[in-house]
Length: 263
Image (spheres, rainbow, N blue to C red):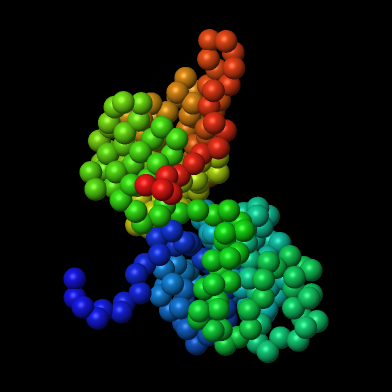
């Protein structure tokens, strides 16, 4: 490794898909560069209407919208976006905001407000804090991950569980790790495409279904083993931890999915 290299590493634990609605091209370019430098993926929209249209087929982890989006106010855009993507975290970007404007935006549904021109480190820290509160998770950049009985080995694309080991393809491994990291949360098709297929939107739904079916088989994701992988038609997939009942009828499975932070 070269000495003295100061390039900031990509933070795979917080990488998110962010929709940016900003009619000012110069402001948008600066914010987009900062988001990318922080390890996030960003899609820029010059107005609110194109975002609303995109949300019919796409999904994002966070909305950042200017107080005026070129065709409607940010306070108007947030509820429209949330009708298509419930619970979407949202930040309003304001130029020299007065206290009354900040209060109005927060009361209208914004989760946070940031003054323009933005300050990079502060903006990224606010985004990270908001996404933590929203419970959005990405696989951490570690060699080994543990979830209950399942141990993921990134070096070998292998998963060990209940005394056996299954070897996965790289795409199967990334797909499975994303599902386990977000157990009990729905994972959108858009997020799967970005994480597993690197934003290749030509992947057919049948391909995702095939990979999900292979994971059910290879990793034995059935109710009899305490897991269920469900297809959410028109949206994506959800992996759930289920209780296992022993012969006496007592629940033996832990209800919480624990990652192996101590590995």
